[in-house]
Length: 196
Image (tube, one colour):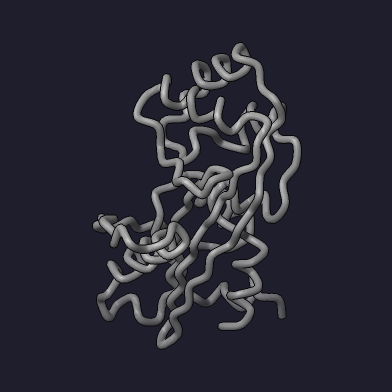
């Protein structure tokens, strides 16, 4: 029996408001509900970016502490983007900042990390998946076109790989494409097989 059939009898909760994570989890042929809890994303400034993203995913999971969630499969995640120097690229505050970030990413390597935290009964586990992304050289016109048309203000790193810029501007990726969108589905499948 494949994992998807085993999970038909399990209540699954995705603790994320991201429409992209919802689409990715649904594409894994899993039935789930979405519940979002507000969590404090203040973290220790001494932590590395990888520790930060893992801690935020765990905090999102910890928000579902009631006994009623004990026998539900909880899936929470957080994504972080780092430039080639390891500096965190958050969500841009405005369109000009988004353009500046993409200018910096053009013709360069950057890293995307998604942390996933899982809980089912007494089992709790979290992992971080890395994807390396190389943008090709982008013209000023291409950058402006993308930012003004797609307005990527809700996206870490100022872009969505599944949008136009990902189709025309990504030279190469090493690792999971879905990870860059926000949920490493193949790795999640492997980790869920270990539980079930």
